[in-house]
Length: 146
Image 1 (tube, rainbow, N blue to C red):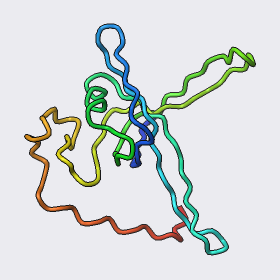
Image 2: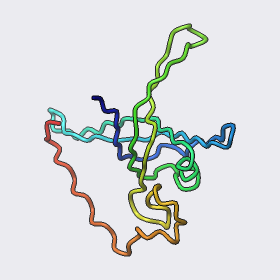
Image 3: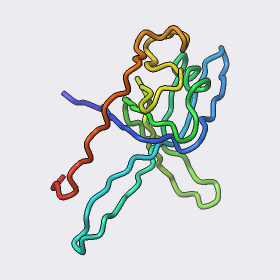
């Protein structure tokens, strides 16, 4: 048995690049930044940012095209895919890893956008919106060993 599942919560690094392939299939690509903050041995807070390449296909890519913008906080589920190509200049084989998104959710303050990509409702008819803001998440403790 094997599992290939990725769950990320982070901020979109730049507006998605959306392309439409033959047959009208949409594909969206964008970087997602996740941050890890910890206290080093000198007592200084250190924030480490990791960048992830996200790929979204078909109907979800069309939602990304309409509503995902740079800076937006997203929850992303997907699978890791590693591909390779031969660098024409050096002749060296290069590898890159992407997260092929299977599901995503908008997080953060609601501005009338679609809240869940599994619901194809227009923003103004979304039944998941509430008038009460969610309570803030507590800050994680910095001295956790993991």
